[in-house]
Length: 424
Ligand code: ADP
Image (tube, rainbow, N blue to C red; front, side):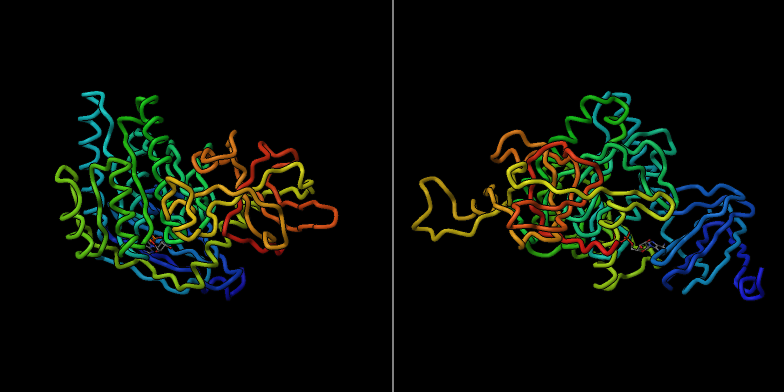
């Protein structure tokens, strides 16, 4: 080992209820962490003693210990410190309260608690969801994770809402296993992109999640944890109320903002428990560019995988005649021209057939399971996504980057507003 690397090796002794927080910012930098003694966890996932975990740039991590532990960290971190004040006991109490509700539901064979985590941007909403899901699954539960965060969500790619059944704790570097996710295409990176469409897609997801809870007893008793996005004002707030209503939530965990807490107490039905929680001092604010980079990274990983688990996407041409391409939303008509019975807002969710053009270059297309060419396209979940890497108007073909080889599972493709510049 070179002298330089040796100097980067540090040992940290944590007392009980302490947290070691660090960030890796420098591109290409790798930080290695090993639990030497005691017990520790990262966002609810237990560390295996003696195993070395690797972190790359962008990692913002907290190693928490209930009992005390010794940790070795090798490599250059940009920030590293031990925090004695954490909200972990409060978060663990939340888990305990949900667990009591689950046990009661189990006894009465009822649906377990549906909890929704809300709050502004960068308050640790996704992290709290992860902690609660990890704790639940460590107790032998099989909860459903619903992610409504279309900008920074962790199921599928940005611009979607989705659900997965959590069967094992998140892996430290890869997160929750993404086997058989249920994904609906929305197509914008913010719920404000098309608010009406967002509500429709959310309703459909809620319906399907409820059906899943019906058919699986263990999942039914375990309930659902819902993550939301940080848009909490105006229409964003109304979307939160709508989500609460459509998913029939029992508990809302409000992180950080008392104003939002009070509004929800005022506007949510009385039988919904609204709980205010402090955010962790460790939560790191993301800059706008970091958010964009995260989104790109997620799409890149969708096609190319991660360093540890590389994927090799396919590229192929399809004739325009082989696909049916749609977009959602038509230009508005003046009120006087609206067909009988059509409301002025209806154009926002109109399914419109389109012909490929250079304008769709680099756009993602959802491969829909829809069988009919109508609203079914909004209500159907998706098989996956492809990205348009070329449009040849002379030969009337498009070139697609796809996780799967030809043929696609269905020829109904839906244009997403999201783009991906493939630099491979
Ligand atoms: P939100 O979902 O509210 O936008 P996140 O849960 O995504 O917030 O948290 C933002 C970032 O802060 C994430 O990169 C996460 O890993 C990091 N983070 C969360 N809690 C802690 C903590 N206790 N210590 C260090 N980093 C944290």
